Length: 116
Length: 111
Image 1 (cartoon, one colour):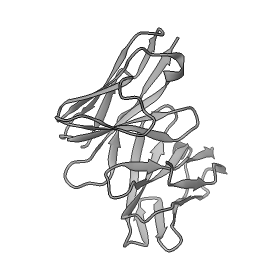
Image 2: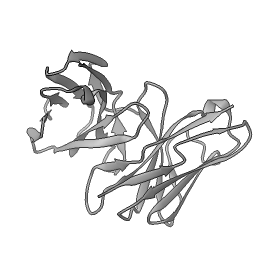
Image 3: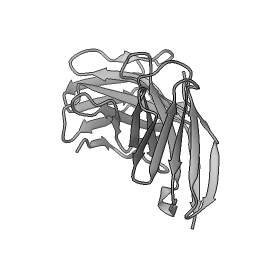
Image 4: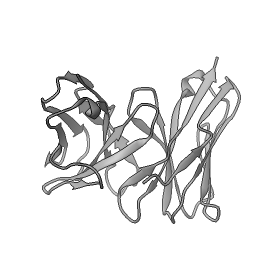
């Protein structure tokens, strides 16, 4: 149980285009999902908290107009990288808290974004 | 901001040996979690220890927590090549659901 999927697993796009990444909780409902960014050989940095039915909460320094988050349902959150630039190339990972009162988070497999 | 700091940054051992990783944090917590990340993949939750627990076991994993020293350790016994991965500790940020991750320990288990 508590499986989180991400799509796509990798994507290459050209500078100036937008890319959408989907995060789904497959067997549980997730009112809250989290989006992280990870640079090579570094830790995860929380970008934003995605709340179903309301606006996402962004961490300091994260541009909300560039990283659009939509939590359309209890099982789906999307991250859209708008007007992507090479510096946006990174590994993006989503997670969701487990069902019930679980503290632990369940992570998707990640999306490798390369902007050329 | 990163709260957890793992030590060492990298660890290389032989199969069958034990691996110990340490994590220090800065503020009061109600739980501490350990995750594993295989290269280029998402994270897998390993174990959670609550602030009122001192030690917890799960299979070959043993986690300790010392709230007075604000530190935790993860011990993997009888390591296997498949244990090769990066290991992160994570603590809740304030009283929120957000997790703050340490920099991680990259473990290599040589067959």
